[in-house]
Amino acid sequence: MQEVAITQKVNGLEVAQLFETISAIKQAPNLAAFKFRLANKWLDGAHNRSRITNFYGVGQENKHHTEFVLDTDEPPLLLGSGQSPNPVEYLLHALTACVTSAIVYHAAAKGIQINEIESRTEGDVDLRGFLGLDKNVRPGFQNIRIKFKIKADVPNEQLNELCQLGPMYSPVFDTITRSAPVEVSLDK
Image (cartoon, rainbow, N blue to C red; front, top):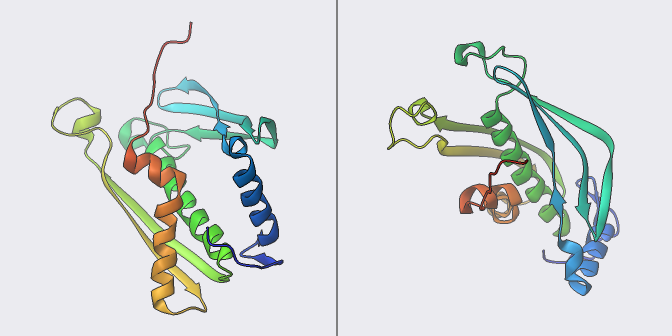
């Protein structure tokens, strides 16, 4: 992030605190190591429930102020009960929210006040992959598209630059596009 000497809130963020965090991590890089986690339980059919209570960061365990409960399901068309978003919809939400947050944080660091951000996200899945009907069709998204509308008092060129900062610095975008290794094993 390019440092801007600002001692106020920009985009809802305390910019001075943001730069203090950056400075602390520069001095002690081990503070940057975070571990996020959740516990999941299958309930019935396509219905799963995840609970998020704590995470590791800045060299210690941290507890969220409240437990977060996330349910997933499938629509009835896909044999679910339709009571919650499905996992790929959560993935689209996580991706879009993370890219949006990256835009907001980096704009704040540059002293750019964003008035509004809206986006639309969609992805294409071919169920033949999930159902194992065609080994040439991947089970996941074939592609994902995010379109942003950003309102800020800056020229269009700068709006385009802001839009590119999101994918450049988003952990979720990076994880999806650069394939983080995922280990799956039986916990005995």
